[in-house]
Length: 99
Image 1 (cartoon, one colour):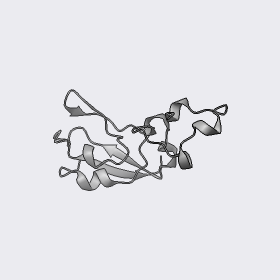
Image 2: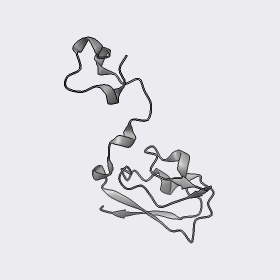
Image 3: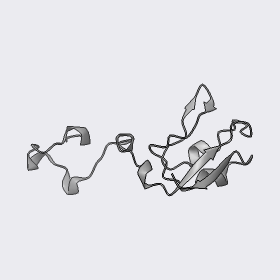
């Protein structure tokens, strides 16, 4: 079975998966979906207590963590849903209208 990155215009139809389903995980990193965003999250580093509660709630994995601390939003992938705002108990995340 071919992986999504191995499929191209010259792939024989016999090698395609039924219904063109993708069985491998984590392919969304290759697709920059931030252009869909209507609202943009704003991160207040001073208010953040690095509890990291926002990280698992983000459906787009747009909150990077390095060395045990969260960083600025990955706006190439954030769709502006606002779930992180509700997850943050310290008010360190707000939403602004627009990109």
